[in-house]
Image 1: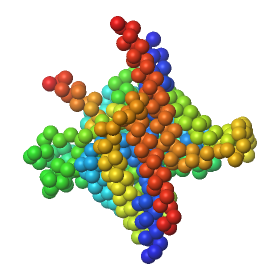
Image 2: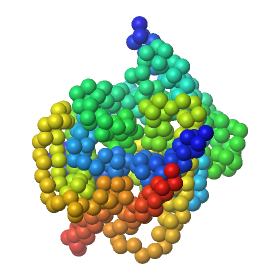
Image 3: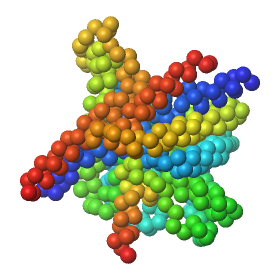
Image 4: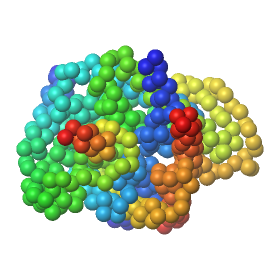
Length: 191
Length: 62
Length: 216
C-alpha cells in the first residue's frame, strides 16, 4: 500500500510529466494562456489517459502477448487512443452538452499528445501490475493538470507585465517553467 | 500465420476507428456549442485543427 | 530557386524548434549530450524524409477526412522499423534515448510537415522539405546539447553509436570544479531553450526591421 502511495506522489509531484519528463509541452505552451482553458484541458486529459491506459493495458496482455504480436504495440496503441478520443467526444456530445461546452474542444488535441502515448508505453515497459498501472495512470495526468493550471495563472499575469521584446510570449513562459521546475525539484525530499 | 493474424488485427482496429469517426461526425453538436473555439495560439502545428491559420482561411473562404 | 529557398528557410529562419516551437518535448529531453543529439537528429531526418515522400505519393488517393489517422499509421510503421533497427545495431543509443524513439510518432514536426507540405506538393519537393526541416531540427538539438554538455560536464565526449567503446572525440574545456550541473537537469534545459529561442526571435525581428527600412 505504501508503495502505491509513493508511486502516486512520485508521478504527480516529483517525476512530474511536464517539468521533469518534458512531455505534453505542446498543450503546455498553447492552451495555458487562460485559466478556464487550462482547467478544461486538464480534466479532459485525466479522463482520456485513465481510459486509454486501461484499454491498452488490457489489449496488450490479453491479445498481443498471447498471439505474439508485441511488435504491433505502437500502431495498436495509437489507433486505440484515436478511437477512444472519437468515442469520448461522441458520448459527451450526446449525453452532456454542458460538459462538451467546457472541455469538448480539447479532446481532438489529445490524440497526438505525447503524454497519453507515454503513459500507455511506460505501463508496459515497467511491467506494472494492475494496481500500479492504475495509480500511475491517475497520478500522471493529475500532475499534468496541476502544473498546467498553475502555469496558466502565472501566464495571465505575465501578459500584463513589462517583458523584453525578444522574450515576449513563449520565451518568458519557458523561463517561468524553468523556475517552476526548480521549485518542484525541491519536493524530491518527500519520498 | 502470425502475420496474417497481425494484418487482420490491424484491419479490425482501423475498422473500429472508421466506424467511430463516422458515428462521431453524424452526432450533431448540442445547441449553444455551435461556434466553440479552443483558445490556442501557441504552437505552429499546422496539423492541429485549432491552429489560427485554419480560421483565417475559413474567413477568407466565406 | 524556390526549393533551395524552402530548404534554407527550414534551417534557420523557420527553424522547426526555435521558430515554430514544434517538437519541443524531445528537444528538451534528449539534449543532455551530443551523442544523443546526433542519434535523434539522424532518426528524425530519416523518418521525416521517408514519411514526406510516402505521403506525397499517396496524397491524391487519400480521402480528405481520414487523412490524419492515415498519416499517423504510416509514421508509426516507419518509427517501429527505425526503433527495431536502433535496438539491433546501436543498443546504447536505445538506452539513452529511451521512450523518445517511439514518441517520434507524435512529434509535431513530422505530422505538421505532412499535413501542411507533403499533402499538397510533389515527391521531390516534399523530400527536400523533409531533409531541410530535419536538418533544422538536428541543428537546433546539436546547438542546445553543445551548450548543455559543455556547461554541465566541462567538455565534449562523442562515442561511436554502433560501438560505444570507441571514443571519437574527447575534449575537456575546463576542469570539473567549475561545471554548472544545473544545465544537466530539466531547469537548465528550459533556460537554454528559452535563451536560444529568444535569440532567434530577436534576430528575426532585426531582419524584419531591416526589410522595412529598405522598403522606405
